[in-house]
Amino acid sequence: MLVAIKQLIVPPGHQLILEDISWDQFEEILANLGQTRSARISYSKGVLEIMTPLPKHEDDKVMLGDFVQVILEEMELEFRNLGSTTLKNRQIRQAVEPDSCFYIENEAIIRGRKQLDLETDPAPDLAMEIDLTSRTKFDNYEQLGVKELWRFNGTKLAINLLENGQYIESQISSIFPNLLIAEMLPKYLEESKIKGRNATMKVFRKWVRENI
Image (tube, rainbow, N blue to C red):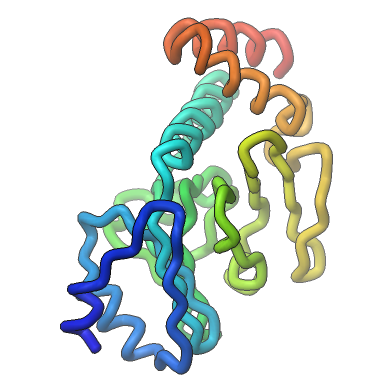
């Protein structure tokens, strides 16, 4: 299987689904894929999905992550953006690689960690998925205990808050309750494609300062 995995080519915007994959097989495949790859993985109780994002997906991911970092800087909150680090818990057989994930409330606990294990480490406070394909499954984020999940489909930013083990869609972020995240971030994202990244960030930072 591992030779085949090495030889697989998953075109951008497509996904490969493998069933009946044990946790040990999943770990072996993950190691075989390596860290320097564009593909993202999602694993849930024997089902492994490997997806290669589109270039637009990557651009939106970077910009939305930059917006979050600006907000946290202006709020003077310590944070870590761990990007697409693998979030996994062997005990419940769940793993996922978000497009970006942030430790905020629990930043001090994972500070300096090179690897995470959600059997013992807390889950990120915020994860983001740029869902331009059909890959996103929410059950693994729920079971891993990610408190807030943002999903951007190219036009709409949906905010999902974890309540009693399930996601409830909300118009307000629990982390940034004073900011109109769902309304304004897509607007600034589109603006960046017209005015450029730096010009947009300058205006965005001013908006954040006026509203926090």
